[in-house]
Length: 209
Image 1 (spheres, rainbow, N blue to C red):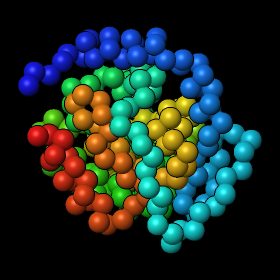
Image 2 (cartoon, rainbow, N blue to C red):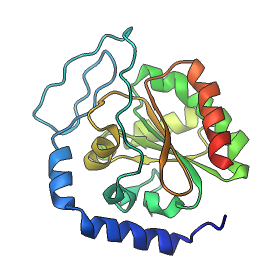
Image 3 (tube, helix red, strand yellow):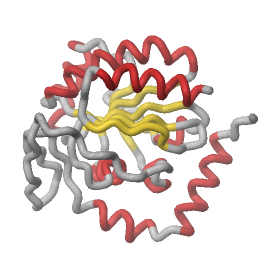
């Protein structure tokens, strides 16, 4: 099956945006914040989240079959200062990881992502890590984290509206989204478990097919 070009994908995205009321959707998600399982996570909000028992099972992911069009064209920055957007990776299988330097489960998960990136990048999988931290306050910490963990995939920051739109009210990290070539979410992981690595590998194999 032929894969559509990025231009055609972006044209479809903008069409969806014009049809939907983007202002209403973004206004609703600005109020949502992010927190780590068992810890409070301030993300530019006046609302105080309720701590979640670290031993409790992660809630079932919300129904989110398609990557929300507004966030695919939202401007993002990586740690090198380069601008990009998720729409740049249309036509590829993409993994989006929401994380933070202080997040314990993220620290256990990221080495597994580094291994998977080495395994799948040459096969057309794009790995993207988006920190939920303030880019101004966390820039040095994130860069040091990249060095310490030898991360060789793109790392940037998730603006509040992007992180909230992805989380859909499940405000804990880490979270992983496996995005198909045609911009559908084929797998969503909340939290970290060693079992997720095998499941993520299988999800990537299925998406590549």
